[in-house]
Length: 255
Image (cartoon, rainbow, N blue to C red; front, side, top):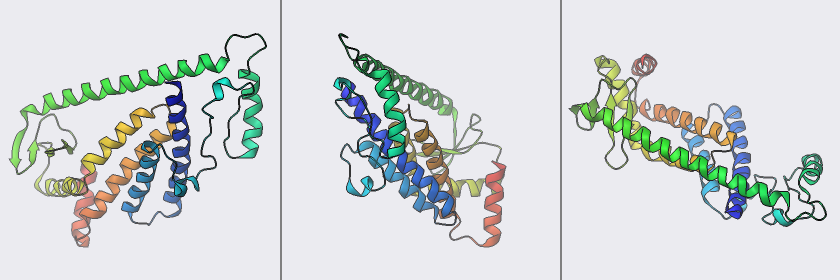
């Protein structure tokens, strides 16, 4: 399990570099089509699920393998971040802290890495439990929802519109929406369904659950969800005139 954890950490670090590149792209190309951002987040997802480093991805990261698989048995443990200045700063500290003393029966990393692996697995387990409990509670609350039309339902438990379900997704709305706001919100949620966002967001969370220890990937996931919403708006208003777009924007603000 320690080798699996080291591999996961290496993939996490490589993906972190991609996240930083995408954040810079978002800042530099604010007017670029929002769907293009979502595609870039897809590269992060591929990096996190693909154990093989692709050449196109490797060109964006300083180091293909930050932590060596045999670091637990090295007499002078070190990492390869890919930036010489950082390596020269970090490695002396790692070497001082984790080099085995003469006569020691075990390398300090042979104790630390299995411990971190156990914590990693515990975190995944807790997130799985959280997801199951949250899904079950929401499904229970939606049991009293009232059918409006087609795949659209209304519920007193719904405070903000959303899509629920993977195979047969349904749109859930609160009862408090006026007709104009309701139509705009339905257009927004239907755009989500057309873009298959009810698949991509849960898939992203599943991947994030494996890499929960990396705060930069949490930031990336939040930005990914935000870009999905922006791309959805972009699709929903594509064929609207200026007046309809204004009404649409106001309706979303009201929600």
